[in-house]
Each structure stands twice: as C-alpha cells, then as structure tokens.
Image 1: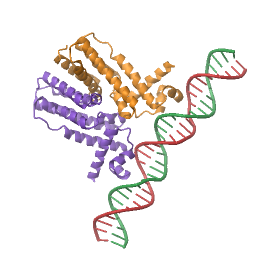
Image 2: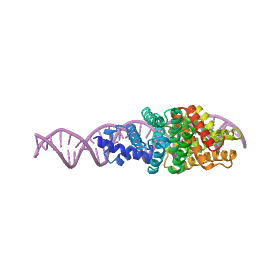
Image 3: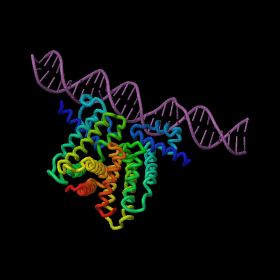
Image 4: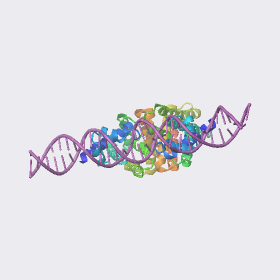
Length: 183
Length: 183
DNA sequence: CGCACGGTAGAGCGATCGCTCTACCCCGGA
DNA sequence: TCCGGGGTAGAGCGATCGCTCTACCGTGCG
C-alpha cells in the first residue's frame, strides 16, 4: 500500500536523477520500479504526478541527510554544505534534481511550487542555524549568501567534481562567516 | 547566407531561453524564426544542431557582454558578476541556458562539450582578471570561488530575483577578495 | 469448491514528435 | 518570353509519447 508507493517513489527518484527527466518514458519508469503499468498509474495517476512524487521523496531524503551536525559555530552553520559534498560524491552528479525538473517542465505550476518550497526550506535551514549560533547576525543576508554557495556547489560539482567544489564552497563560506564575526 | 543563419540562431537562442528545451518542437522553432522548415534544416540539419547553434550564439553574446569593465581592483575582477546581474534583469530568467540544455540532453556528447567549453572559458575569464589585478594571488582557488558564485547567482535569481541575487553575489565576492588582500 | 479481489501483462488509442519530400512560387538574366 | 535556381508551404512518414483498457492469474475466505 503505502509501502508499494514508497518503493515506487524511491525508484522514480533514482531514475530521474540518473537518466534525467527527458530520457525516461513512462514505460521505462514502470520497468525500473518493477510494477505493472496499472499499479504505477494507481499511485501516480499522471507523468507529472510521478515527477512530483520523486521530488517529494528527494526533498524528504535530503532534509534528513543535512540534519544534525556539530552543535554550534561556523561548522554548525556550514554543516549542510559539507553534507552536500558527501551527497554529491555518492550520487552520480547530474546537477540539482529540482532545477532539472524545472527545466523539463517550465509550464507546470505544481512542479514550480514543489521546487520553490524545497529551496525555501533549504534557505530557512541556513537561517535557523545562523540564528542558533549568532542570534544577532544579519541572518537574512548571510543565509542568502550560503544558499547561493549551496546552489553554486551543486552545479559546479558537474565540472570540478564534488570534492573540489565542496572544498571551494566551504572555504568561501568560512570566509564569509568570519567576516561577519562567526567562527 | 551567413546572415540568414545568424538570424535563425538568434531566434533559436531566444526561444530556448524563454520556453525551455522541452516545450518547443521544431515546428514552433521554425515559426519563431520565420523561415521555412526546409531552410531551417539547411542550416541546422537536426534538432541537436539547433540546440548547439543556440548555445554557440549565446556563448558569443555572453562573452561580449561581460567583456571590459573598470581597469583594475576588485571591481575589475567582479565585473562579470555585476554584468550578469544586469543580464538576468533584462532576460526573463529561467536559469542557465547551458545547464538547462545539459538537463534536456544528458546523452549528447556534443552538447556536453559545448557546455563544458563555455564554463571553462568563463572561469578562465575570472582567472585572467585576478592575475591582471593581483599577479601573486592564488588565482586557481579564487577563480573557482568566483565561478561558484557565478553559477549560484544564475540559479538563485530564479527565486530571489536578479537584483537581490546579484547583490548577494557581489557582496560575497568582495568579502572573499578582501580576505585575499584584493581591494 | 467457488468467488471476489488485487495484482500483472501488454495490446492499442490518439496525439505529437523529428524529419523528408513533393508541389508550387518569385524573380533575374538570356 | 522562357527558364532555372532558390526559396516557401505544408502534407505525410514512421516512431514514440502518455495513457487506457481488456484479459488473465494467484490467493484467501466462505
């Protein structure tokens, strides 16, 4: 039931991430999830719903992935960036799944909302960590800067590799936090 | 001749930028360029060639756009970032055309090369500006950081708007350069 | 045993895709 | 006046798309 749906969503996420949104037709998605076409459409009644399902699954998985970390200081604030580096290292990186979905479905309002929600939550995560470590800092400006580093890291990993891109992003993040009096 | 080809390439660039790569079929591209299907295929013998033509056109236009600027100092180094802000403000921003193309055609080696070439030239531009202003700086690490800000700015503009994203990127860039002793 | 249920396999629908090809038209030069 | 070249318009090809629907199968329960 929900278990089947979860298994399908996981497969959709993996396939869209590895092959992109344009390459995989519904029949290929069905085969990858190892279910019948009827069952696939039972839980995800349209291709757009399959994309949304994959994005929801990914949003959940990523939020879990970047949770926690050292309790305070710059390392606490930058923890999501460090974790993103590790994430990109084990996932074969083809850029950001959400931005790729936006590129593939520029006219879908539902997908646009899912992507925007994910990115908003991500920046809020940075804001929360900043305020936890330095309650008096300019959390709005700093979280915007860290969010920008996060996006840049995701895409730059395609060209420089995850390790180098993560090192660059972390170095820049530390510099920016240090200039704001956070260490 | 080459004039017709140029006009078609310009139209392809604009259409792919505004509507994305998945939305526009060849017939729509033809109509947008205001030529016959036969002529379109004469200069761009396949859909992939049309995409490559748009990317080449955009690469040229963007290189021209970010050329020049103040002769030295941090403002000289960061000039491409400032110009990108203005660029994104007049083009309706749907992210980076090159990354969108990569998302739409993950299996095309030719497109991958075109994108990689563009990004490599872009970072080389930063490196050149750094060495011109501060010959002894760590141009490799700094240009990687500025490139990352550039990519982040392009994508973050989707959510925060071009103006705010550009301000964030420029502020971060100045901080990073200042920490490296460049002002 | 008989039967309802939840699943599978996969043929087939109409629409659209990238691309080709035929038929036609306009215009400058002999 | 006639003709050839280079353009246009757009019908039509096979393939593939997202999606629906029919026919069938195994299993648990009365």
